[in-house]
Length: 355
Ligand SMILES: Cc1cc2nc3c(=O)[nH]c(=O)nc-3n(C[C@H](O)[C@H](O)[C@H](O)COP(=O)(O)OP(=O)(O)OC[C@H]3O[C@@H](n4cnc5c(N)ncnc54)[C@H](O)[C@@H]3O)c2cc1C
Image 1 (cartoon, rainbow, N blue to C red):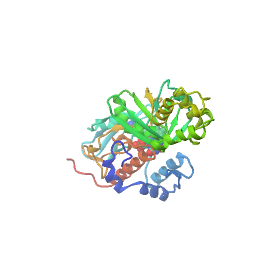
Image 2 (image 1 turned 90 degrees about the horizontal axis):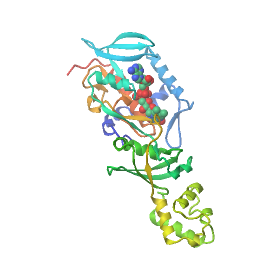
Image 3 (image 1 turned 45 degrees about the vertical axis):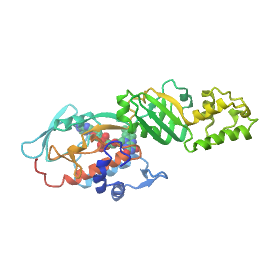
Image 4 (image 1 turned 30 degrees about the vertical axis):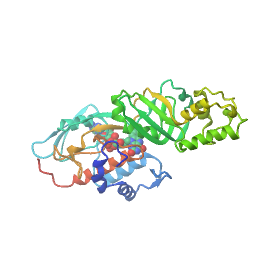
């Protein structure tokens, strides 16, 4: 639940009914073989998302589901008795259809939020989550392609809020990406939006080394590698050459300078650059790169045991349409599998009485 910046606590109930192990078992029982990566991530053995689609289609066909693809739902109106009248579009043709139950699983598409709102639901305003950060004009961009594992990031927003993450990070052509940045932007998504995606970022390049260990590494170089040039001898071998040259430049220390000549001021500047280099966040990464939308139908308006609307009996709301979003690592998918499974089961039950 800690992996969900929004919705986490409320998901305790749904996850107690259908969690990751259940999803894995469901897929395997329906013929999709999964493999686990060393870091715990799960993929279909075929390593193609199409294998998941094929599995879901097979299961639907076997259960007698009739699929109508290429059809957009334009409007849903509650019928006088039970159920809904649906207005649909296929190409230029308009169609109507009756439905006893309606499950909206429209993801982050705006039409789903309009449909839910048309059926009486409130909406938490949508904002992007899980995105990369732009550092326009920052000399760090010269290191594009460099991965640092782990880096520790602290984001300070103009309103004083602070967010911290420690995980692998990637430098890109326009800024920063990788799990540390995606987690950071997920938890800060709403506040970053309010602050116009501006803030101050501090990077600790070696969070695995404690303060005294870091000092010790620099002083050991000065003492034991005194005749070597700073540019050719890094304080520890895992520190990237490109990053080390960048940090030397940042501190205005010539690469040809010998370790023996490192002044106290230069030593302090290097320590500061390694522990806490400051960068200005100028925006978020390219539009459309975000992975998930925060916001949507408030969870309080849904019965989380069945995913049925508390406002409109027979209507079920699942997946990203709800005000739930997770960080990377499959947490968004899991919430979708869980809510979809609960709604699917509940659809078979007799209709609930109107409040
Ligand atoms: C590039 C990318 C990578 C991602 N990687 C991961 C990952 O690794 N792990 C993870 O957990 N999550 C990941 N996510 C997030 C995850 O894919 C989504 O959260 C999840 O797929 C949402 O599922 P959903 O069923 O709610 O909606 P979707 O999967 O978005 O499906 C909604 C469907 O409804 C259809 N639809 C919408 N409106 C209408 C309408 N009015 N009429 C008819 N049809 C309509 C849409 O066309 C779409 O087919 C990723 C997202 C992106 C964009």
